[in-house]
Length: 135
Image (cartoon, rainbow, N blue to C red):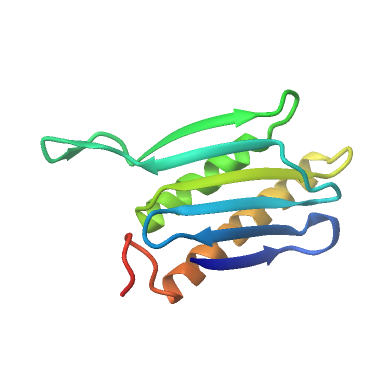
């Protein structure tokens, strides 16, 4: 197994995405940041099934959330992107919090989440661990 950790942003808007990459069987990730990293939601995403040679969906997703939290929404976006890039199952647990965040601050957090996700995928590609196989 391989551990990959990436970050994007600074200060209270910093986002960290850690992943444990199994041997071609998927990724287990923790997405956290802001002023109070925590566990607020979790998602499991898998490549969509095929039937008679036709792919029924790109990604199937199941999510759970701690009442009152919206972290599963970010976890869903990250998990979908990882599954599409790697064609492997991915679990993402997420907890990002900034007290009284404005719309603009939420936008900054969203951009940092996207940047961290892109950085993780780039590192996975550099490590040749995409497509469910090592090259």
